[in-house]
Length: 411
Length: 213
Image 1 (spheres, chains in turn cyan, purple):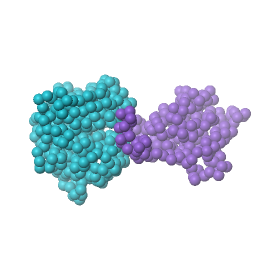
Image 2: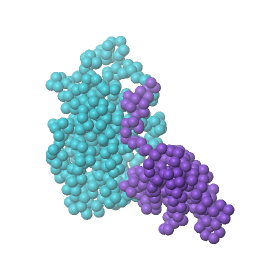
Image 3: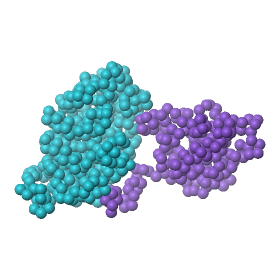
Image 4: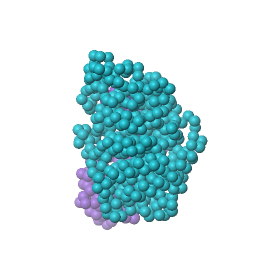
């Protein structure tokens, strides 16, 4: 059931012209394709599908929980995640509701990666200011956790209208909120935030040389220990990555080069060769991808989740499905074995809902939230649910693994 | 304690008169520091060699290793000698692009000696209307004298009243005095909690500050 490492795909949901044919897929086509891709991720034996959030062309994924719920209905084991959820411009109340809802619909197969978003114009569309990006990320997340952990929330902050006696519905499945990773490519405060709460830290590992991410992950691990969640080695780390494969490595390079050269993010910049040398992008045979990614733990320590970017830059659906096939059948089975070797026993397994519920309730029954007759009048009847919320809700500041059993948050 | 000077030269040809001016300024500054019993070393950064890396940094968001090394050497130096040719009334595009990939806070308090060169002395005020405001914006501390060299300064029609050599020495003297007046520069590690957590050294401070406490 639980596994040491989870492997999967993360998509930024770009709709990009295929540079080899000049054809741009329609929104309808690309949205259909992403469902096919996500289902294939499960079919080839991978664990996670994570979807980005964007609110402008050329992206389609403005409403990730809609898409993830649709995918969740057509899969059975796949963990549905985000890449990333905009903690800055979304109302934390809506995040709390949407993802608790998704938890219930998918039997707990949900976690989230929080990000600030790097598209400047998005902030004013949602009434915010990009210069407040970091304070927004910190305050909004503090509220999100309260909404998930407490049945009745009184709140006053800087960026949102106050809440009085508010209950976010539905309550998290089994009384255990989704696991949260915090993603950042350059901001030490976000590594600190992940460590403070005992949450996971996700390094997208796409754009920068490894030394850069090493500093962030080392900081996160040290601060995770500082806040009393366990040893640095017990911190929960996820990594992104990027690969394109063919049996013969020269074929992979020839096939991928036009997509790389014209990719929206790094196209017309460094050459494919330079980019492979400087970043984890690996274009070659499955064995080359295995070698590159089996070495990641030497740079970052034993970790819990490895995601790959595969459906971007205009690559056609058939090619993406072939790539998933190679990843699922030739690469990941070997990586699972290699990364299991000499993995210290104290390193936690990748987080799952079932394991997190067991960490809170042991063998006992988990919470089932049943509203009281007077629900809606939260302030006078002692609570909107029949059980006693203070006793049943998981401890504030809890996380996965050792930290989940800690009684009081360290402030 | 030994000090270190970073010299940034944005000349495009080889040999370039930009680099010649940069070398004059560097050796004069070393001489002025020696007068004050201060030993110093010099790191010369030729932007021509980094031109592709600088463009890649602008497009991809990170510095390739050679550029990363150059950036580190600039921001950790005790003083900066920055020399650019004047193109179309201002610093060259390559020079500005290099400045653009430096962390905007990293040059705060840095003593800077500005040098520039162009075909004629009619461009000499570019130091004061274009380059000096750039360093002011970055909270660097350019010394009062900027040294401008026209093509004629290297030949027969040079300024006989205030020759280039005298201007170089004056600028170098000011930079040496600025370096001597400061403690050796220490670079703050942005990934150390002390650097980003503020008072209290805890995440609670970041949370509390936001709640208006």
